Length: 109
Image 1 (cartoon, rainbow, N blue to C red):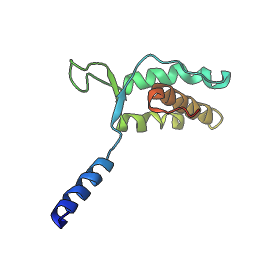
Image 2 (image 1 turned 60 degrees about the vertical axis):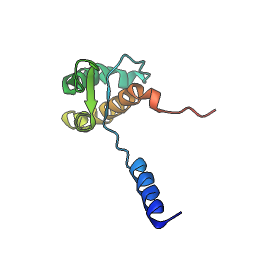
Image 3 (image 1 turned 180 degrees about the vertical axis):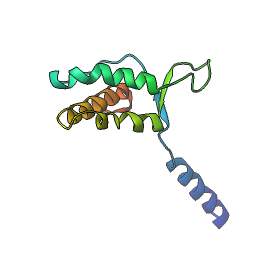
Image 4 (image 1 turned 90 degrees about the vertical axis):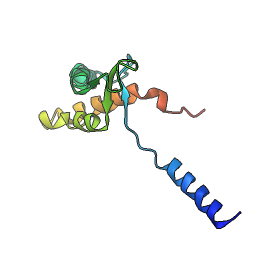
């Protein structure tokens, strides 16, 4: 293998590793949470829908898309609650995001 071939192969491997999470389309999902966190889920879901970008990738793809900047904004939601409620809201946000992204998580046997 010449140095040029090696260089090209190295660049290809590096470009494959430079994957960045961009966002996801909101979908119906089952959210499992404790009763205290459940209280805030409706507010989290409503906020996520308000932040989401409609038809982000055109009408052919459609849907409401939550991109990285909107996810960051959603994670700031607890800042608008009292110190007693903020941890519950933060938990509700993470539980909701995890439920939305369930297909990205691999379950180990």
